[in-house]
Image (cartoon, rainbow, N blue to C red; front, side, top):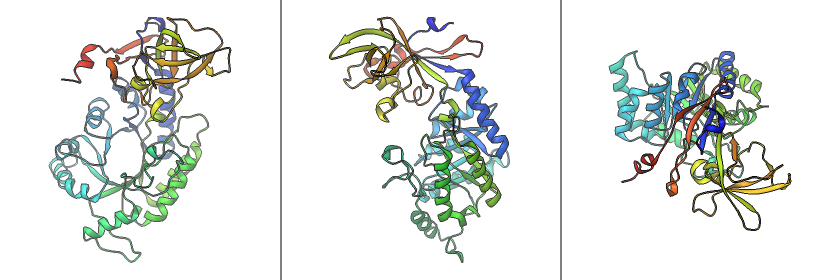
Length: 398
């Protein structure tokens, strides 16, 4: 299949670019001994999991369904964190995951026996390691509280005060340095505070974390540095990241985990859309069969301006248009772009960096069809992976 034969709207994953990202992440693993995990919340196109699994250590999940997907389709390391777990979910999660991370001591106490029972039953065949999520109370995201786990009132992770209050409540012994002993089955700590950030922010966050929790790092076997690392972005401070990982491993003897989602598929996907109509109200407005609200929610949520192939900032070129969609939502606007040429009904536009937080977040508001999913192979051919229809819309309702 060629580009001009694709149905629209259609997501297209670029296999060559995906592999370029994966090689960077694989080399990071080889150079530092760390474990890189795909955060499926950003990219869950499982047809590519066999390829991804050739380069990195596995997957991480935000709940039962993602954990099942990682276990079924990649079959490598499989980690999970959620703010809370249902009892019924935990019964299955302990059979799927290698690491289970708890957000509070209440959750740990509620579910630790299920982990212990799984470990006793499976022996060395499938062992589950318990971790606890920490809030280091060190924010690096000014003005973006919606993405900031260290924002005031955050529910994500335990502060030092809550952590030690929980340990005291469990009756753990207080040590000479003022810290508490950890329960024997707690083997790791986890923090995740970044969003599309560089290694300098991670380094500063770790130092703040270390200042409060160094004594606990000496009691565990692994440390998970979460996600939000833009490792495959041009100019990322990868040597600084390698140095930090080396320091953690040498100082504390820990296994180190990273959970990038965006970095795996950054700039490795497109959304192909067709111009259905052009209307005028103070400016020319393109009506597309792609929707910000339905197909790229981050455009409205972050907000985020997606790159557009052959598109420029409004007013930069001769012809400026507002790009909107077929939905009834007045604010369903992707943005204003300019072009070197006039746009016609029937033209195709290609949004870039559309592999991440698109397919995993899309919806069928207004009964708008879900975009097809295709893969641009390294040989230049396009392979259709999945197409959706009316039944996919109807099947979510009753």
